[in-house]
Each structure stands twice: as structure tokens, then as C-alpha cells.
Image (cartoon, rainbow, N blue to C red):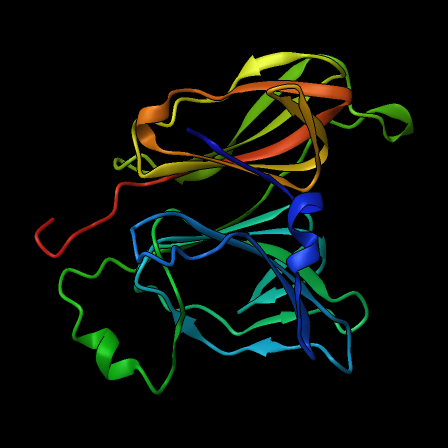
Length: 247
């Protein structure tokens, strides 16, 4: 069954830190199962902002900026920037703008509990067999409409270059008020996130306002999206099938 989680439903469990707030949308499984993991990081402006040092993860990862601005390495991040890093691909540092801070989702399709930082973990990185480092950052745009309202109709646009033979894929989706559509097929890949960044959606007679995450396994089929009375804007991200040491 798809996982559907709205910020409104999890913000009461937010973890307040000196440099940011961390809100688990899908926390790590206590059973240690290979399940999705997702959280929202709300980084504070200066002087309390945080710089995340260069690091890597052993799993594929998406970052989606939803508010504020900042940088990953030399890449500017602003709403709605999407950053993808393959497993064992170093990136960073990651920093928020000193005036706005930066708020972004951290998304994994498989169990993930932490990062390995550089240069301390360089020897570990060099020992990984069959490593295929790659990263990509793209900025997602939505259709404009006079007065700032979400336009009528349904508009889907692929994110340029975010595609590979293992199922990696990304697109933006704009849905006018009270419209319905089926999200792209998640079957070819390693799992799909739908990130509702504006407006709201209906699911089983409940309205989920932004920010809302939907996660689907590859065998769960295209998700039926029903926009609320103000419409919705979403970013849809398919993880690729993971590489293995024998791939």
C-alpha cells in the first residue's frame, strides 16, 4: 500500500536542533528492513545556520529544496531544485543562505541511517567495488498563471537529463483545481516519491495539504492523484534500480 504522509500529521514530532529542525516523514524502520526513509530539514539563517561537510551515502539519494536557498558545492539550490546522487557519490559542502536558510527533503528509497564524511572516510570509499559515482542538479519550473493561482488543466514536464537505463526519472506535475490523473508508472525502477509542494490532494476521503509525500514500491502501479480545490503542484521522482557489486 502506498505511504502517504502530510507535514501536518508529523510536525508535532519535529526534532529541534540548534541549527535546524528535522521532521521525519518516513523514519528508519526499527526492524532494520530495507524500507524507504525520508525527512524534511529546515535549516536556519545565520548565525545559527549549518554547513554540512562533504560526504557520501551508501544508497541513492534525492534532495528537493522547497524553501529558502543555498548551495551544494558550486550548485545553487532554490525552490524547486532537485539534486540526485548515486550511492557512494561524494558531494558537498551543503549550506543555506545566511539570510533565508534552506529547507529541503532528504529522500531514500531504501533503508539509510547516516552519512560517511570526508576526508575521514576516503579509504572506505576507495574500497567500494563497482562504484559508479554520478550526481545531477536541475531546477524544476511550474506553469505560471496570472495572480499566482495554479492554472487549470494538467501539465507534466520531464526533468531534463534525469534518466537512465535502470529507471531513474523525474518530472513536475501541475494540476488545476479538482482534477484527477494517474502519476507516471513506478514499475521500472527502485521506488517512487511524489512530493506535493503546493496545494493539496485527496486520498481516501482525506485532504493532504502540502507538504505531502507519497511513496510507492515498483509493484504498486501508478498512483491516482486527485487535486484539491486550489489544485496542486508536485515533483515526481523515480529511483533507479540499485547497482550491486556484480552489476
